[in-house]
Image 1 (spheres, rainbow, N blue to C red):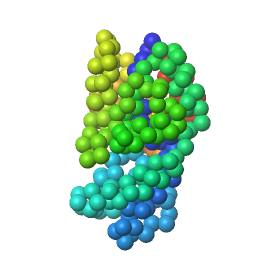
Image 2 (tube, rainbow, N blue to C red):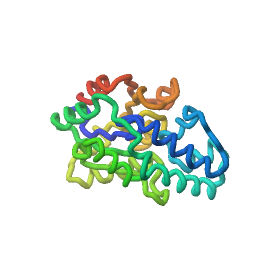
Image 3 (tube, helix red, strand yellow):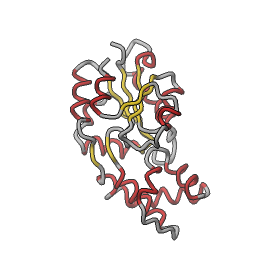
Length: 221
């Protein structure tokens, strides 16, 4: 078996969270007197840590970014988390991979409590041996830290072989590719998420796939 341990990003990889994330960002910006009516301009918030995005895209200080994240969650917790859809074919792919002996994990920069809620909501929680997200207080929010914790938990779950030697990090943004490469993992980028054109190739993804079906064939190796 070429690939055994499969680490999946969540947003833009397993589910399409566009509506929920962008409307939550819109709500947070409104608290600062910024009215953004074009939600397409807010899609870069899908993937990276929220604090960094508020600072990068709107010039917020760290204190303003912390407040913006709190406002974001005011909308996200009751509404935005469910303004989300699973990409067609994902559940079937996960089931096929598990039936063929693959060990699945989630490695997301989204707070873990939200990751688990979303996985339960879509009925795919049970496919994952390890689920890792960030902490609500901002700890472990870089993809490198998330991947490190996922690998640690995989190794502690009783597996004898070196996990990274047969592990793949799958995601839709450059952050996912960088996080996987930091730990010596094979990396697979998916173009049906939110990467800009050429982003995944420029980040050095080992594979770039365009569909869920193509991803499933790759990971079955």
